[in-house]
Image (tube, rainbow, N blue to C red; front, top):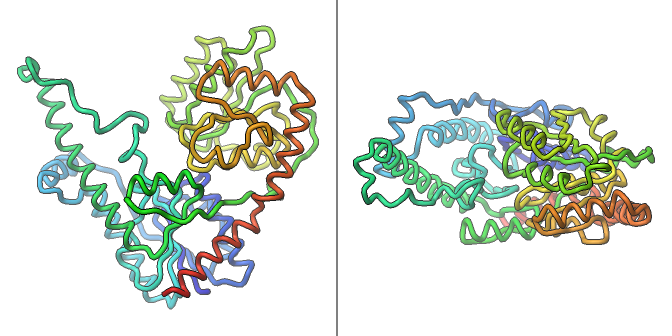
Amino acid sequence: MNIAVWHNLPSGGASRALNQHIKGLAERGHQLTVYTTSMADSAYLDVDKYVVATHVVPLDMTLRFRHIYRDQLRSIAYLPDTQIERMLAACQQLAEKINAGGHDLLFANSCQQFMMPYIGRFVNGPKLLYLQEPNRTLYEAFPKQRWAALPAASGRWRDKAYRKAFWHDLFEQRQARVRVREELANYHTYDQVLVNSHFSNESVVKAYGHGASVCYLGIDAALFPDLNLPRKPFVMGLGAFFPHKRPDTAIHTVAQLPDASRPPLVWVGNMGNQEYVAEMRQLATNLGVDFQTRERVTQQELVQLLNTASCLLYTSELEPFGYAPLEANACGLPTVAIAEGGIRETVIDEKNGLLCPRDPVQLAAAVERLLTDESLFQRLSEQGKAWVADKWIIDQAVDRVEKALENVLRQA
């Protein structure tokens, strides 16, 4: 197949998944051309030797005051805002190249700005979308409920600050409604939508009113070997430094462990909000937790940490899939995880890890079991490696994507 690949991804799990898909499809003889924007982290994707070419169009989502003011006025008529217009323009430019490129079909991927990509509106021919997750900020309390109303206005309207908040809230909510409307329209431009878990499919149904097809991701075990290194007494966390990855839960959990034997918490993240990182460090200091951060570590450093940690503590909120527990399993490291989201499909309690509610006391008890029960650690370690080898190898993931692409092309 001659495949046009579109994405607007940052570094992280979704970009890693696309990297594996592109490499796997290219190694099977398919021809791929990448189309993306200047916002995407193409260096992290690192697929130049596997693709015919990479086409990049400039895209800037920075807003000045005049744009914000204009968008507020346009929201009264439910018109698209400046960022949507800029994305539409960028997608139109790329679609012209795609339509002229002689491709058999479009393989679109998530957009870091909107999640549900706009490119499907402009590309002719068969279109397949791999959506990692819907735009959670529009549909969930992420990290707070954006649809919550202001306090009742009784006695407050004379307050200047309240009046200002009222108008800001009015404009913001109307702009959000436009984004929901536009996302729904985008969803229906694709012939098929793939998602990474049954949980993600449920999220898609709740967001867009229709479902998607589950197409599980895979782990490149060659990148995450078990080096049989001595384990050290530290707990590891993985995830970008943002509230929905919930390092606060991990800190509260480690704080529940006995003072005398409390291990450090080493948190690895590829990006983040520095103010939030400072908040987490202060929280850890207040609770007596040795909170060590590692940002943008190399692959070699990541593998070293996964091979020397004594536990992976995975606390992300409603994670749609989550590579980290499976990557840890490949390195022989069991996981203590919260039984939410797609994690319930990748971590099986007492098989490759331990599942708990979002309760620091119960999580800490599970962590302590792994730290003190050598036979439990060894059993979960061996079963975790077998679990990855049996169900989550990268070749199987590429098989699933390749089959989905062929089906869309056949149906078209």
